[in-house]
Structures are given as C-alpha cells and as structure tokens.
Image 1 (spheres, rainbow, N blue to C red):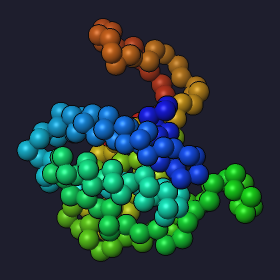
Image 2 (tube, rainbow, N blue to C red):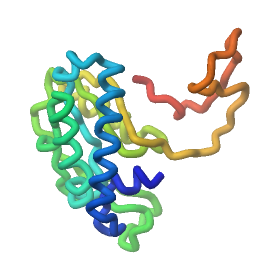
Image 3 (spheres, rainbow, N blue to C red):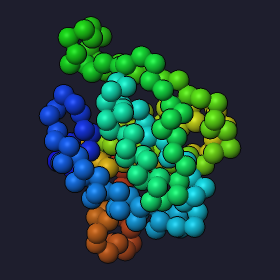
Image 4 (cartoon, one colour):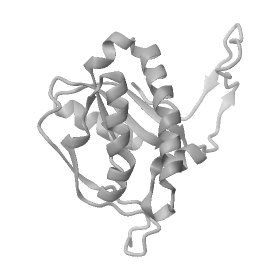
Length: 189
C-alpha cells in the first residue's frame, strides 16, 4: 500500500523525494524481473512501454516521466511517455468543481507514432480494468499490438464468488475446483 502511495508521487500528498526514490529503486528491478520472465530478456527491446495517464498533467509528469525513462533504460523497451499528452486535466469525484458525482478522465492526445508497436500497458493501480481496456482499444485503433498489461497493485473489492479461489503461492488442487468470478476480475489480454 505504501509502495503504491509513494510511487504515485502526488505533489498534493506531501510524498518526500526520498520515499519516491526508494520506491523506484525497489520496484524497477522487480518489474524488470517480471518482464524478463514473461517475455524473455532478448525480446524486451521490441516492447513499447505505455504508462496510462494520471488524472492531471502535473501528476502524470511526477508519476511517470522519471519512472518510464529509468525502466526503459534498464530493460531496453521503447518509452512512449513523450507521445502521450494530457490536453485537459481530469477531475476526481471528490473535486468540489466536479458536479457529476464521478471521476472525469483527462483528455489525451496521442501522437501518430504507435503504428506497428508492441505495446505493454502500465498503470499504478487497477480497480476494474476499464482504463486499461480503453487504452488497449485506443492503441489498437492506432495500429499497435497490445501484448499485455501490468500494474503495481489492484484495488480490493468484495466480489460475489462461488467456489474456491486458487492461491497462486500453493500447489494446485487436483482435480481443479469450479470457480465463478465476476467479468471484471481478469483482463482479456
């Protein structure tokens, strides 16, 4: 929880530069290890990292500019940070200027650069996966192939589940037990 909080580097939350730096030092090697295991170190150079924009341009810069550069430096991935621009800030549902009662996403401009790229989407936290799915669709419309999505965390929601949920850290149960989950538990890529 604190790792995600410090990663966000939100100027309004008074996160110290040292806490943010310590978090980057911890997570970048972990992400590299996960990507190397998933794709193979020799194939990372063919991936393009797309960080899903934060709600405002200032938050986006604080959160992703340095992170994306450092991660791409150690993995060899291509960095898409400079090709995604927030043209109008979004608003949280708690913002007193927001009268809609729900979060308003930022307006984003994507440069015509993503064609034929193999894109890895990154978001700090996934709640339901809607933003990740929206950017998957946007990238595909621009001619990119989305090969996966990655996040530091997932918001915990109580979902009605019937059956047994397998623990990924234990040996599998044989025979597999039937499991029913909501359609928002796993992303379709």
